[in-house]
Image (cartoon, rainbow, N blue to C red; front, side, top):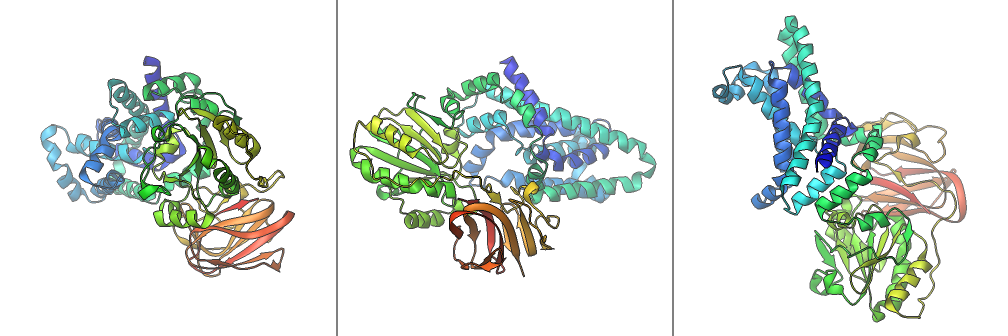
Length: 548
């Protein structure tokens, strides 16, 4: 246990130096610089206490009060703005700090303001997470509290707090050197803190993580993702990790990986009697194919004809397919959108809306699509990630069912040639190494100038675009250039409007955008290497390109 706590402490340190924490560092620096000798320690104490308490209890507390799950984060951001205001307006600072005067003979801001600031930071830097924090979050969500869980959370918070303490002390020392210019120093710190809080409001932490890459991944691999840590974290969760072991190989065959996790945290069920929920226990005696998918994923869509053939051929023999729809984009959370896609795509088997990723997490899944084949006793016997090997999966189904009949053959459309990788268009997941053109502006409209020559597998924006999160929203004169290599080109679009397309200067059929879904831009019998130029009417939202 001591070694696991040590790993938790190191994981906290890694969290505090990862890209998504960078927006809070100016706040810590300014907070430490704005007070006396004990203020940095008050900041860290507030952070450790708030992180530990609310990470373990926030979900249950908010649910009991009927409040949204992001309420505490919103409150924390508001507190950051309040603390910034106390630095800009000294009289306001005196009013805010007055309740803490009774707590200390020293200047109240050392303790009161510092603790409030640290408590706020404990809520806004949480998204930097690895296996340790994932374990804490899962157990807390399941209300499985214990001494080991509390200690692991506390050590994790202390590791992060140590780094931030060094930053706060550094800010304090800088402040002392500028004591002669203190009159302008505190308001300047207030401006820095407010600007950093504003960056958090607009999710700059996520943008930075995308832009800078995961430079802490090597550290994580040698600490919280090590074999020792994985074993002990699985023990804390009460899992054996067998499905994770299966995930180490793209395809694994008819071993026994233990009991299949049940369907957890499902928001809604489709294609069941009266939309009633299913369970692994209730499906005993059947062979169950648990298929993780999402309706705008072209890789998932290409597997559907094979699933339809298997369902038609083997359902009468005891095969059940359960499609676990785990959304990749925000619009895929919407029940009406999924219902429409299920009807449009001819999905007749039960579908579970896994909007909270609870079942995805229970299976330790990481891929769209992913198939887990469960035998009649409820044990996972085969796992396959991605497209392909349909004959092998069908053979496994027949083996577990004990039947000889073969389903009608479906063509294997899994691409085998080199082609352009999936290309995201929103700044949150945009691959900057495959972007060419004007600098990216996040969260506001900007006029972009497209390049004249597009590099291989790259994109370039032209005209007015507003880029935020997972989405690129077209403005006046919006264009998008793509140089690709593939037979087929698809794009995920939303809103309502029209998209025109030209391939190497020659017009293609325009696209009428009527709903948030996947649209076909080009379908060719042979692989092409060309440049697409798409023109968008204002208001159309673009999410990603996929290829076939």
